[in-house]
Image (cartoon, rainbow, N blue to C red; front, side, top):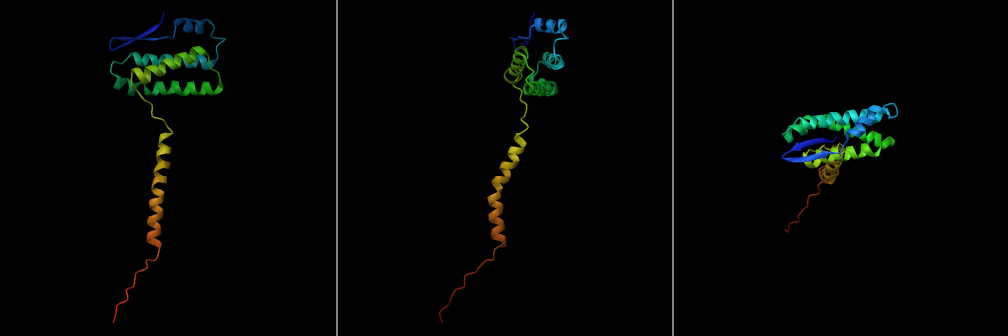
Length: 146
């Protein structure tokens, strides 16, 4: 069996076959704890997606579970403990989140980039202003004819 999610009359098949879930149950000893935890976290996110018809509410209420899943995926990718089934599941989940539901996770590095860019933008203004305020203003003296 496959999981089906129906939104706006369209079916989006999440290709997370129950074969994978059944295999996980049968061979749980052979799977790493990360894989089992990833599948549980993935199921939490997909269950959250199924609860909502309104995408705005879905984006707000499922954000925490999706973020946990994405962080776990990132750690597993860094540790090189991902199998192709988990990568496929995450790719499909990311596509659902961003394209089908139009949800976005703000990137965490945007705040420091904006802060540094703003500082660099105002640095010349601050320099010229302080230079103007701290320099002696030489007034022109006009020589008048007698």
